[in-house]
Image (cartoon, rainbow, N blue to C red; front, side, top):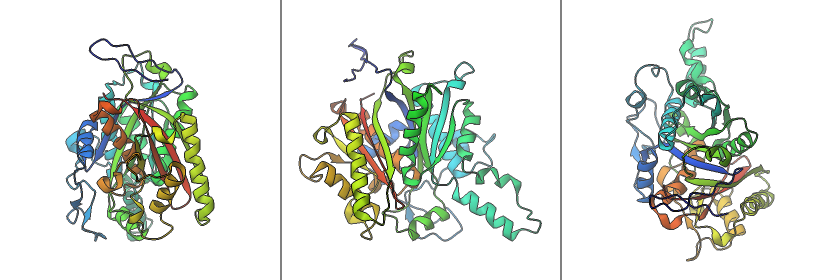
Length: 391
C-alpha cells in the first residue's frame, strides 16, 4: 500500500493501515542542532560538528575534539525548577522528548496521559553518575557518607522515569540497555507494545551523554570515530489510533528485526546478520533496488582499526545482501558516523533522524524506503526499513 499525503490543494487524504506503525514527529539534541528542523538542515548540508572539548571537564580526555555540546545547559530550555540535579543524559532525553511532542503537536493532558508512554534506549544510563556515586563510597568517611542526591542519577532508568514525571506520562515506561543497538531494540519493543494495545502513542528513542568516562570507554574500545553525544526521540503511533486524529504520518516503520550471534565466529556472525537484513526486507516487501538510502551504524570499512571491528562487518553484510553498494546505481550511504561521531546508544536514533532529515528536505523521496542497520562488538545486530514523506 502506498501512502498519499494530504495537501493544501485538497488532494486525497492519507490512507492509513490500522496495524501499521507511523512516525508522526521527532526531536533531536545533537551537535548538529536541536529540533528536527535544525537537525535536518544541518545534516543534509553535511555541516561539521566536531568541536573542541578541552574545557568541558577538569579530568583529562583522550582527545581534544569530539562531537559534543560544550555549551549545553539544561536550565536554558527546561528552566531552573526541578532540573538542578539532572544528570546530562536525563537533560538531553527530556529536551529531545519535548522537541518530539512539539513537532507532533501533541499536548499531554489528563484525558490522554494514560495512553502516552516512553521507550528509551541507553547503554547503561549515565556512566558518569554511576562512577561518581561509586567513587564516593570509597572516598567518603564510613559508613559510606555518600551524597544521597547522586543516587537517583545512578539508576539506569533515571532518564525515562524523569521524563514520565516531567511530561506527566502514565503509559508504558521502559528503559532498554542495548548500546549501539538501543534504538532498534526500542523500536521492536514499541511495535509489540502498540500492537497489544498497551498505549496509543509511544515516544521511542535513545540517549548517550558525553563525559570523560564515555570518552575513555570509546577510546579504549577502539571506537570507529570520535565520540559523540545526543538524544533522538520519535513519536510512534498505530494507524488505528492515528486515524482518530488530524495528525498525518511522516514515516512508516515497515519492519524491524534484531538478533545475535557469536562475533568471534566471523563467518557465522556475518551470515546471521545478513539473514536478519534479508528478513527485514522481505517483511517490508522491499527489494534491494527499491532502496534510496542506507543508514549504517558505522562508518566505511576504511575506518575500521582491526579486522574484527563492526564497520567492516557491517559493510560486508550490506554488500552480501545488496550487491554493489558503492556503484553509481547503489543507494545513497548516509554519512551518520562522519557527521555525528560514535554516539553509542544514541547512534541508531541519529541514523533514523538522518533518513527523516532528507525526507523533510526533498519531496522527491516521498514513499521511498531506506534501510537502517546496526551491530555491536558483542554480537548483537538488527535492521529496520522505513519509508517517509515530506512534512
